[in-house]
Length: 235
Image (cartoon, rainbow, N blue to C red; front, top):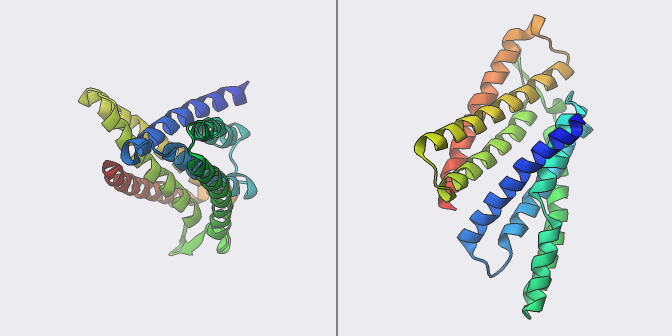
């Protein structure tokens, strides 16, 4: 039952995110070609490969519910094969055979390449000393910091698109951004702490190190989110 609930929550967030990203792409590039569906499927495929490597293959101490919410719920709802199929059929029905063929080739080929690239990036991140750098009596889990930064960058872009597309009072916008960022910073920080526990660190003996890494992760994610805001304004 717990897995069903978290998958439903992740799926709801993924579906909303897909709608915002695809709508932003169509508003930017037009609807002559299914750019929105192509972009969300390629991004989702890359994230699936990257997070599969980070969450599962390296056996980080994250419960099955958490993994299911991200991989099955969020990414499963963020990507869409049915919309890709329908848009391809519409192109054929309209006589745009070349565009339909291009959509099939670019979607299938792009998604396969994106998954491969995500897995490769995940393996590369953890290749050097298990994704951890020892420096000045502390530890820097650089691999997870990069993964968390990527998520923060996407959140910055999506939040900007959301604020531009939906008319809300200023206080509601501020609350939405604070809740979104606060939730992500908490979960990504927990992700890093669990990784450190897997590496043999404990709160009793390494409290300063864990707090430093948590604060560093939060600061880095905030900076990258701000960059995402800047990019989102250009879409």
